Length: 222
Image (cartoon, rainbow, N blue to C red; front, side):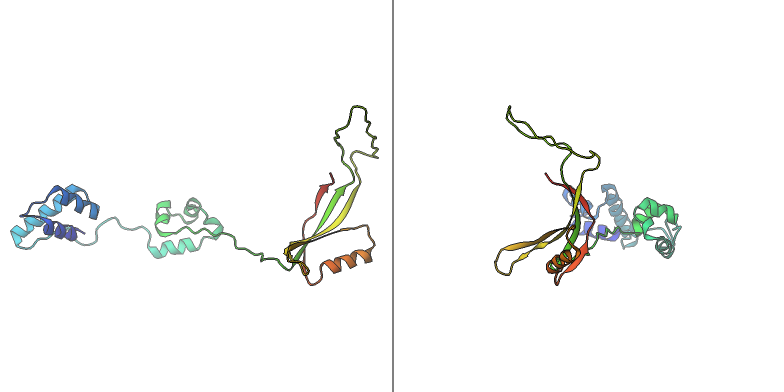
């Protein structure tokens, strides 16, 4: 980089002089301070005057700089030996490998893995769900006239209200055979029916379709 800076300054100089705009432009291009630029240019002129050839290369001989503590192969082996669940943060990976966070930041790249879709369009799927419906509510509010009376309700126990179970089948909206409008395949069967009748209704509704069972949930009738 020093040679490039010196050559650029030498080409843009006029009789060995540099204007402020040229100096500012070169410093911005190479990302160096103006004092560094001045030192490189002065050294180039001095070596050219004494030896006939400008020399701005580094004067340090042999291996210079701080010696590396870990080789790249050693770092790679340490990182790959750590399981993935301990590689979610730089701090956890640094604790598992014994390396510094700054060193890991230099070598490791962060990858975010979003979950992939495991469910398709589900056009040929019907979801089955058991629904519980309470026969009544514990507290009900009504808007009445001043001379109207409400028939009292009688329950055997407030803690055990009678419930009825229904089998519900739901599918995605699809185009009907007779109409061009989208229809929602929706069916609800009382589980108190006879077993043969219930099986016949289920067979008609779920013919040629894949069945998936869902978790049951409790609902109330308003």
